[in-house]
Length: 151
Ligand SMILES: Nc1nc2c(c(=O)[nH]1)N=C([C@H](O)[C@H](O)COP(=O)(O)OP(=O)(O)OP(=O)(O)O)CN2
Image (cartoon, rainbow, N blue to C red):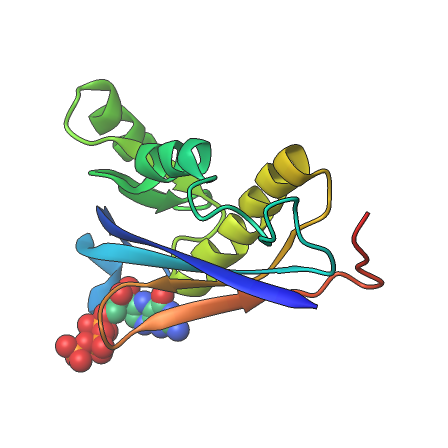
């Protein structure tokens, strides 16, 4: 099996974790970073798992979701207020299943594999994603694909 990685840095965004009883329920922000791990049992005709420059469209999706945005959980009770702020042009609201580091990694694992299926027809699979909020804190989602074989 071949493995490669790709890192995307510099996504300034804010979020709040409404279920937290401490200060994480308040809107706060970081410059997030994302790291992806890929595997393939066969290489492309250039000898690569995935062209490091082959993520331009995915980068646009990351920019749309995480560049100067406010992230809210889909079950946040204040969602109507945030939608109003978005309508007024005060924030750029993006709603995720779960905005924490682990939840964001799971969300991106699904999105990256949709992208890879489209661009490599299932040859390449993303098995791990790390979302980092600062030098101290990150959350990882890892999922292997049973019986993964290159086509
Ligand atoms: N496992 C996780 N734990 C926490 C998450 C998370 O996404 N996954 N998120 C938060 C908060 O939203 C925030 O991002 C962390 O802030 P904070 O508690 O201030 O973090 P530190 O304790 O590392 O900060 P110090 O400055 O060192 O106190 C909370 N936990």
